[in-house]
Image (tube, rainbow, N blue to C red; front, side, top):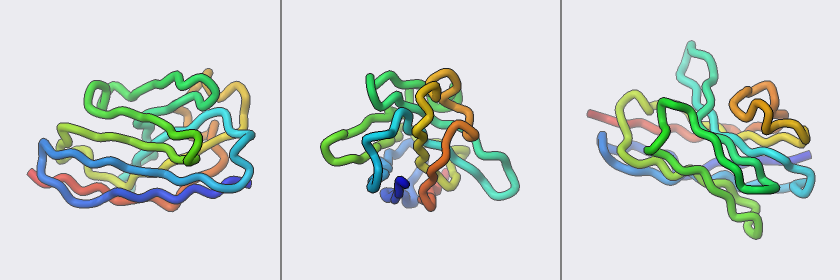
Length: 127
C-alpha cells in the first residue's frame, strides 16, 4: 500500500507560479511511475506530467509543456510540480498518483496505469 498527500495548491493571478508537493508513504520502494493529473467538475481527468521514478525520465502534456516541471526527491519520498506562467484554464483540482506497474512508462499519461491516488489540491488562477 502507498499513501499520497498533496499540498501547495491555492489561488494566484494569471502569470503567477505555484509549487505542488505530494508526499508518499508506505511501500514506496515498489513504485515505478508518478504522475500529476487534473480534473474539473464534470470533466474527465487529464494528465499533466509523469516521471519514471527509477530513471527520472519525464513526460508532459502538450497543454502545459514549457510551463511546468515535474521532479522528485527520492530521499524525502516527495513529488513536485512547479507550475509557472499559470493561466485561468489551469484552474483545476490537481491529483498526484503512483503505480507499481513496471511497464507504466509505456503510457505515462493514462490514468488507468495508476493505482494509488492522493486526495487532490485545488489550484485557482484568476485573470
